[in-house]
Image (cartoon, rainbow, N blue to C red; front, side):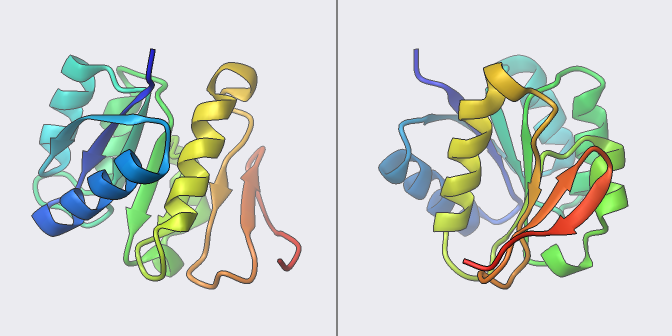
Length: 154
């Protein structure tokens, strides 16, 4: 059975671009879209996706607030997909249970890599692996066991 992804962003253009990329460049399907944080919580409950791609800056509930609410009902992996990746603090990401942060700036291949990593790790390493990808594609910053560390240059 194909694993499913919920895409949450208040921009229709971003939702469509993300959906097209996921459907063309990963083996996973998109089960739905949500337009804001409250809609995300409702659709996470109803659709039970295998992964959620969540915007940070949204009306009604921002990405961190939505992630916190989703964590009350599900342990699904969550990727915070944001224009403001450099402003997201690792402490905030860890405290609400976000698994990865991927910057919107740049190319979507970073998002695809995180989607593949998290969905392939879901059964083996649930809750043990998370990555925070900065807007600079030359390095990774990993979040593991509550600490942040810079990864090796690519």
